[in-house]
Length: 428
Ligand SMILES: NC(=O)c1ccc[n+]([C@@H]2O[C@H](COP(=O)([O-])OP(=O)(O)OC[C@H]3O[C@@H](n4cnc5c(N)ncnc54)[C@H](OP(=O)(O)O)[C@@H]3O)[C@@H](O)[C@H]2O)c1
Image (cartoon, rainbow, N blue to C red; front, top):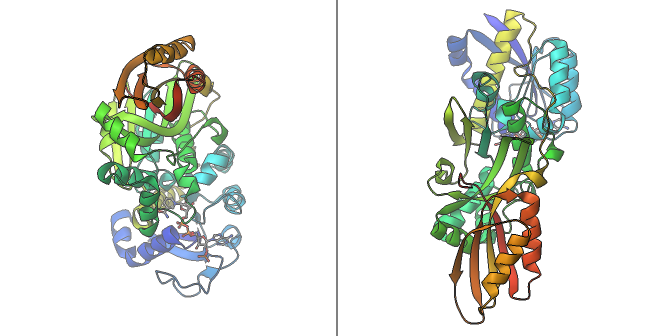
């Protein structure tokens, strides 16, 4: 039997489930893969903590460094999360010639280039299928299956919490705060939901997707992000009337000015496949000249789906250990221009509260025009003192759109810019 010793850093939601699967499904995995996967050590913070799954006797340790020094550990699985101490432990394991499997998007987005270089130097694998999209196979398709395609764009719903909240708001008219509270009750949202709802979690995933799709490392500081906390049920209704759903998307594109990655809410045409993705489900939509479009969808989080992705990487790395080969990185990164977000063409939906009197529309159109933004459509709701204008612009550079918004905000006839959300559609 081909025995591989596994050391785990962490035994929480993902690690605990992985241990359970490695123990209870050992024979089935061995029958299917020919591998005898044995857990050798499990590092946690608090060994006395009650756990959802039993951990076999004698494996627990509070010394994560044992994964690096123990010769019985052939392969390290990092499922502790965060950058510190996970980052240095992963680096040391790679430098010690041990392949590493991690589910840690925060770590890969922040230190991926360094860790991939360390893996290459040692000739071992660094695999992170679970870091984006949980149980959805997306890292391997992007870095291996699609390596021969000149991808043009990757767009994804990569945060289940926000998609759940937007789905409740859209389907039941629930207010944002109530939908967030429901997500917290169901365990979809953390007690402090900031990283999810303000887009930082999705930005880490968008950085990874952009890097793999375009073969150049896109650091987190090149991924501008905003979240959904300002989205109202009213805008979701207006958007639907105009033919759009509102989704929080990570968007990675190969533009003439370079690679661009960003995360923000968008109005997306109702007929777009991502508009149909409901609840906590994640989905990634990939475009390229030869494949046209591909959609990957499924559970973006949760112990079991994520453990399946980690287990797939473990099996992959274990096979490479047994083959005894020097492993080259799945994908090579080269220097390429990164687009400045200010120059990236965007389109906007803008909801304005205005005085309803002659000449108002002309003033607003002039403000947009002076910023070189042309208006595609205007819709008016209400009359008398208070009227609501729904404006959708044509495509123009992001900086021009921001100038237009700033100018409109200062017009006397505009009482409030009640909403401003980008539109993602094929039309110019
Ligand atoms: N949960 C998901 O659905 C999901 C989905 C995709 C990716 N991920 C990623 O998977 C990773 C793990 O997530 P999780 O939800 O399983 O986290 P979790 O439930 O919080 O578990 C973290 C585990 O790491 C251990 N740990 C943390 N810091 C440690 C330290 N300094 N020394 C030793 N052990 C330490 C904890 O020990 P104690 O048990 O003693 O506290 C715990 O067992 C994260 O990077 C996350 O982003 C999670």
